[in-house]
Image 1 (cartoon, rainbow, N blue to C red):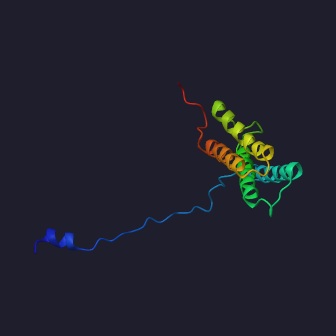
Image 2 (image 1 turned 30 degrees about the vertical axis):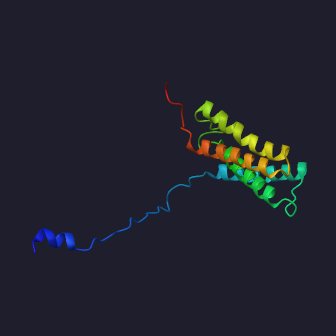
Image 3 (image 1 turned 60 degrees about the vertical axis):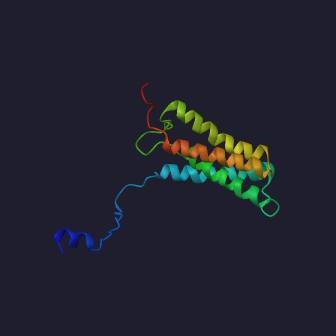
Length: 146
């Protein structure tokens, strides 16, 4: 056998890449944002419960979807809170993009409250809240030059 044939016949060794976790890395979400996200979640939950009630047993799908809306909208709104050391001016990033994300984050809970106990509308509200969160997470820090 030739040397080239022997090398091809040798079994391939598959090595999975190892993830390196740096425990000293700063938290991705500053404390400010986590606190605001928690406070907004509690406030929006209270707002939904106070305005239309929260019938967990009577409307479980609506309750689950509305809970998702509350969490996603709270997190999306918390992303406007600036990081530590950046002052208290809201982190709008690219202003036109941020306006759309802000409108979607507010529209989700509003729609869930306005059309209470309708599963289809709660699903639409969840889609709006998910779009707000996705938009805020993926938007550029500054607007691109035309």
